[in-house]
Image (cartoon, rainbow, N blue to C red; front, side, top):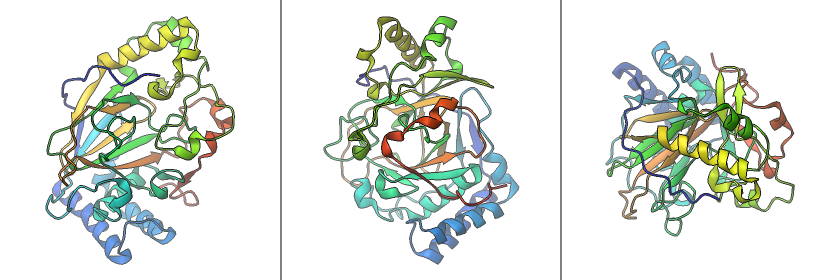
Length: 343
């Protein structure tokens, strides 16, 4: 398995979409109203219904800025929201102790996610919450999860092991005093020869559950072999997590093709350093993401992101064979599964 030692890219501007002041006010006001009504960001059926209703009432300017990713970069930064560093309190010591820290921003992110699609949660991760807190945690410094710090978080597809993974990944910056960058690389910007693509579209190796899914790692079923690349109607897409892919089990020609893909993704990788209030939106079928190493202080001032995962109803970008995968026993919960898609 890869150990996350790829070179760190230099900071690079990402496509930016700007929410004007009136739109930012509208979103913050809607989040405040929901938080006042429920007193928590811990999701319940009633809160999720209210989020859906409020998201449907958001104005056209917000909806326009939340349109699908529309460049080969496969991502954009939504700018214009506000985070008060003093009011949000200390960076939590771990997701387990975060509770309702930054609850207003949980709800604001859920509203944006609902405009873009259907937020999902996982039974086996962060107690089934729809918004995750991404903070460094003591003892996890060198793991390949969002709680790590001192190692490069290897570029990967979010929840690559699962056929029900998100189409979109959203990261809201709460605090980033040290300008720690998220890395991102789009497969649409790589230059891969036909032979490499053909090799990697074969289902040769499984992608195993990562360390954030302890229960899934103990699943007894046979790991499904999946392609790293496939051709969607609009271009090349990928499913990629080298840290949890047992490359040693593949033939030399497959390993060589996989490393060519790794090298190309490293070549086109960019580093996006988010400021408080900015939301990075990543197309999870086009872009692998990671994080540069940093030294955590554990003093309440460390980097703090909030993460939401979103499925886009009706989107067809993945191989039909994924429908037969067991997902290592993990179930994704859709926030609005019984509702019609947002307009």
